[in-house]
Length: 149
Image 1 (cartoon, rainbow, N blue to C red):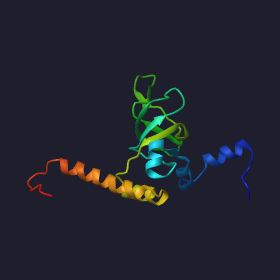
Image 2 (cartoon, rainbow, N blue to C red):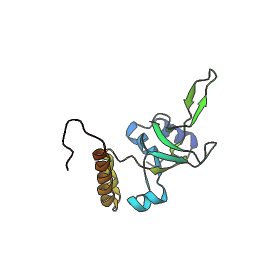
Image 3 (cartoon, rainbow, N blue to C red):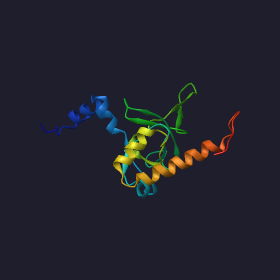
Image 4 (tube, one colour):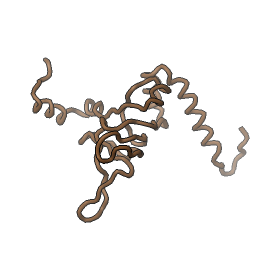
């Protein structure tokens, strides 16, 4: 069965999509540097990624993704807030198609596997990321133990 060309039915299918399909709506393109480094063009946005907003009133703003709202298909980015009538700040929802990922959060092993599976160049990156994360762990002082390598 082919999808309908009626806009109302298309909006309805997006609004009533199940979670495993709704997850696919939350993808964003990578920056040029990340594309060359990882060998992939786009990936799902997760909390912890750093994005740059490309469209709208917040154009040019860069910040970390605080929350990914799958129900509304929107991102909440650090520093992108508006004030409610009572003065409390709330995050302004940004659609994932209006952002570009400039820094990936690769601390999760499952996400690293996704990047390795999709891009041919990711194996080198995983080694670099692992060495840099190990260097960060080693630079922190440990309590009650010998720090020799």
